[in-house]
Image 1 (cartoon, rainbow, N blue to C red):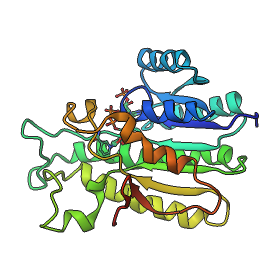
Image 2: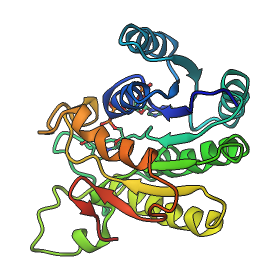
Image 3: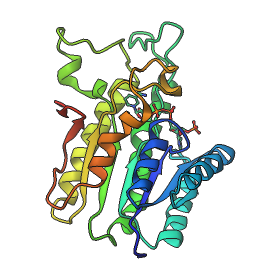
Length: 245
Ligand code: NAP
């Protein structure tokens, strides 16, 4: 592996992913900008380079086996290995005009699409990148989840958790569960695997309804990507601390 540490951020062409890439780049990481659209990917790479980041583009659709395999090969060629993987790419699924996903009428195809991206996409990318991560002295995996995936909060009538979201919220619960299983399986290898919530961030994702900036949303992911050895493994964090499952 080269001297500089390397990172891959999925869905890094905009929003929170872009700011995670920028933040890791500012900390000296060589950053792979994982993004499926060539024009948006190259624009992000150019913007990062203009800000002094050592960035390279990684064509990546997390729902596509071939694309993910090709991305792993490219990261291997560019960086020789991988120190940090941030699984950030995610979709809300159709929220309808009322910004709700009603479980009693939900379209199963839409649920499948959300799970394919938000959960299977993370498994697909993580497993493709694991051989590269195993070459690192301090590998870190960060899964960008959401506190709407917290069953403890969703089931508490005294906590404001926003609208009913029968595809998106359970996809993040599923992702949290998968995060714990990776943490258990990889315990003792030096690889730390954690999930995080960026808070309600103003991005395309929610029509810029969030009160936080993408930079604020990126902070906990960057912290988890740069954890010291012996740091937490298999936990779920937001800025204020641990999120209950
Ligand atoms: P965003 O601005 O919409 O960015 C989402 C990113 O994911 C885009 O780069 C998008 O690429 C990419 N993506 C989607 N499907 C993909 C696929 N199949 N393959 C590769 N990339 C794909 O949203 P964001 O707010 O930054 O969200 C980033 C993460 O934060 C998501 O996992 C989301 O669930 C989570 N989150 C967001 C909030 C919030 O308030 N915004 C709150 C909690 C959690 P394209 O440009 O090609 O579509």
